[in-house]
Amino acid sequence: MACSQEKANIMQNPSISADNLVEEIAKQIAHYPKEPMYALRQHAFKCYFEIYIDNILVAKNFDDLLAGAFDINRLTFKSGHHKIKYKLKTILI
Image (cartoon, rainbow, N blue to C red; front, side, top):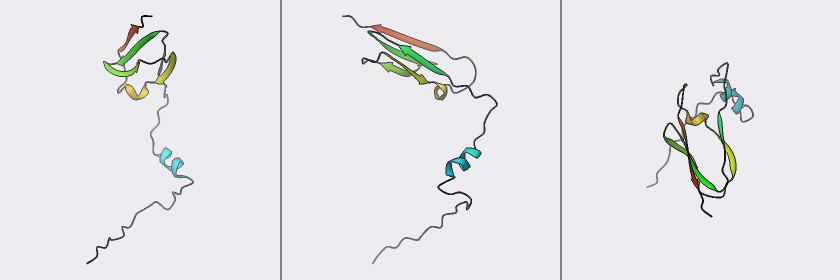
């Protein structure tokens, strides 16, 4: 006995192709008049750090990273005020 699989029919919009897929998806995304980008930049020399937003650990450095920045828009789940905590731990030489 052999098993056979039924071929499923895939319903696809005929106006969407590999060339315009991104543009078609972008049309469906709601945009706002103002879309600010928020980021944190840290500079740590001979110290370790942890960064918290609303008491959630979002970044830490226990290597030799000296400076950098990261986007925090994805970490703020609502509009309004947010608590940012920065724990700095010095390295004893």
